[in-house]
Image: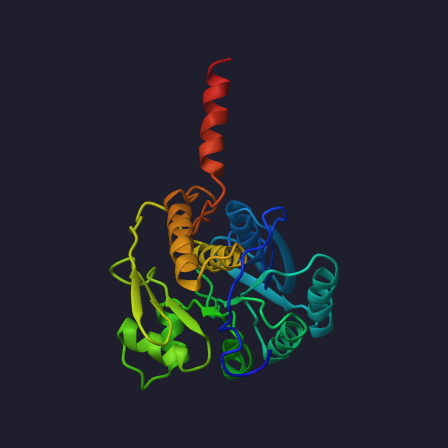
Length: 289
């Protein structure tokens, strides 16, 4: 499970009598909007069992990231091995990695998994609040050690520009080509930072647009985490990378549409589990008493 296009594999559905188990290797968001908290909600929304290997503890809310405390490399590897040996891992989502030591630990842990395990890499660099979550010297390690292991990489437009480098053309197609050249088997350049909310999927041969609605009245904190986690979940469910990307786009878009704008003073969190709808149902029931 090293180098090249290690994640260009034939995906098979988990047997119908077993719930797929999907692992998030990512940071914790104390505000509950992004990171592993968003990932677990997305996994539940997709009907898979969610597991976590926490890479960093963040002290953050909807306005700012106040502190970041990396988890030791040994603890990261131990978390992955613990769940893999007992529960098994049908797919992986990789999110916030933070620094070089963390990236090395994650690469080592992924190497312990089966060679057919799908991996979705969300190259988290900057938080919704603007705080940098990937140290500058860690980007090269991310490119060298993690991206070549990805079945699908899911950068947004700014992340794709950062990965592609200053010489890359700025069109989504050329950015997708440039990121694909770094090693992932497939790339989705997500459309949240574009005028049109269209994701662009590239498998090394053809481009496929995945259109979606823009929801300016929604809330988007955690939308990238939700998208990449939903994509990993659908790979575990046996969908092709393209079909998984389409399903993830729909789920993330709905979560933004239903986002909780009144939670916190900043960018509100997405709502992947229909919390708003249940709040409305509770209010309606109370009014009938």
